[in-house]
Every structure is written in structure tokens, then in C-alpha cells.
Image (cartoon, rainbow over all chains, first blue to last red; front, side, top):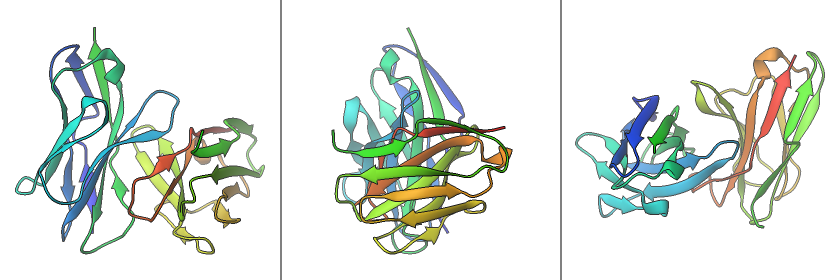
Length: 115
Length: 112
């Protein structure tokens, strides 16, 4: 079985400060991990993904995510937050070596960046 | 612009009415999906079509039907709408079921 958790419903950060949006996952095999962003009244947009290789993945808009196998985490990070980063962020996971070939989405984390 | 187009963008239905949500993609993707998004529940998969000619149930299929009309189009039908189906519906497509999804802009449906 595959599952993903986003433990924070909301993250608040001041503009210019680093931000982290947390994601933990559970799979029986190896994970295929994604981050998506949803701006108000829009559909989700792909940010980045991890399949294999370097644990630090770089994506769109200056975001990056770090895959940590021992902690089963894939946290989304950005060194300096912008007000325009305020949005809803979704993590998704697929178990490559078992389970469904359809990724499971987390419940989403609302990121609010204050000026 | 290339992408996923959903119609309509907004709809209000009375309980018991039926309607079809339309979705079309122009990226030659094989797989298409319907999700619903509810506060606190995140994104839940209703139905998907891994390839033209196939459809499968997702997490929350009850009360819905789908049709993969051709490679481009994937419609979602509510035969007898219920207030519990008030939600924002997203269509998405991808090259394959485990690949990056491209999402439409959503349909906000209210059932009264």
C-alpha cells in the first residue's frame, strides 16, 4: 500500500525567510515522489519529482525538495520565500515496486507568505 | 495554448438533476483522470482512464460514471446529483498513469 501525509494544514512564513513544506510517505518498495502547487482558482501545476539519483531535486520557481529515505520524507524547500509563493501545495507518491501505478495525493498544505 | 480544457467552469444543479462535465486534452496523452477537491480532504480520484478504451474506478466512484470518448476526451457524468457532490472537479491527463499530470482549471459544482 502507498500513502502520503502532509502533517501541516498551514505554514506561515515571512517574505525573504526560508520555507519548508513537509511531506512523509509510506511505501513497501521504492517511491516515486511529486510536488504540485495550486494557485487560487487554478488547477494544480507540477513543481518537481524524484525517481532516483541525487537526493536533492530542483524544480520550478526556485523550489527544491530533499528525498530522505531513512526518514521517509520529501520536504519542499525554498531559500527565500516570496509573497507570490502563497498557494496550496500537494505532495504525491507512487510505490514503484508494489502497489498502485496511480500516485496518491496528500491533503495539501496552505503556504502563506507574509510581506 | 496546449493543455487540458474543462467545461463548464461553474454549475449549480438541483438535487436529482443530471449533468456531464466535459474534458479535452490536446497533448496526445494516453491517460486521463477525474478528481474532486474538497476542503480538508485534498484531492481524491474519482475515475481514470489509463488508455483509450479503458476506464477504472478510483477512490470515490459512487454516484459517477465516465466515458472515454476518444483519446482526447474524457467526460464525467452525474446521473442524479446530491448535495454531497458539491465540490471542485478537476480533469487531468498524463502520458502514462504514473507520470506527471497536467490539470485543467476546474469546475466548481454546487448541488442545492
